[in-house]
Length: 233
Ligand SMILES: C[S@@+](CC[C@H](N)C(=O)[O-])C[C@H]1O[C@@H](n2cnc3c(N)ncnc32)[C@H](O)[C@@H]1O
Image 1 (spheres, protein in one colour):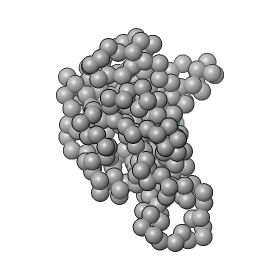
Image 2: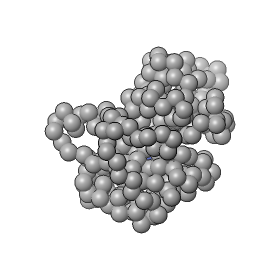
Image 3: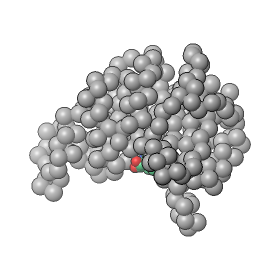
Image 4: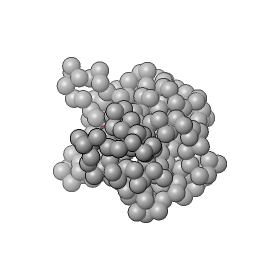
């Protein structure tokens, strides 16, 4: 991921693409600089990620092809949304949609969530963090690869402003239950709401009928999933 980000950085600064990197996604990434940031670019512009930095900022970790970040941005013009993912084809596809829909309260970054949380963001910077269907690493020996562990959740808590929210969805019941326990132990309070009703404003929590790409897939296959919103009180 870092390597691809560096290639995009080099191409954007005018370097010729080495042959093996001449692929349409990298070429397209060059034309999406208004919407797609590399990790280095994010660091450089930080904290001025969005045009209007007065709006609350929500990060979606693992934004995949951008469906959700785009719908959230379109549905909540009063907020800014940063979608991050580690896969360059996915971030290019996400940024392509931001451009197509002319969204100015949304950005995409090719960026590892661990870097963003541990190294870039100051404490109490974000108004919300969404982690929807993170890779479940279902085998026992791979459990250590899960993003949502105690250390990460503690950092997430620190990066949120008071009243900030953490919105979590998973189809993996064990991962969901373990994460739920860790969140509650870390100081979060569960904020249960009717998933089909938009939250009343101005409490800055966005519920409503947002369906991620994976969520749609699970619904179509009849696979159950679990979600909860947590507040930093
Ligand atoms: C199972 S998919 C879920 C995608 C989307 N959230 C949804 O619900 O449709 C998980 C996504 O998280 C991304 N991802 C995995 N580890 C990540 C990390 N450390 N930082 C950012 N994104 C990550 C993957 O590339 C993938 O796109």
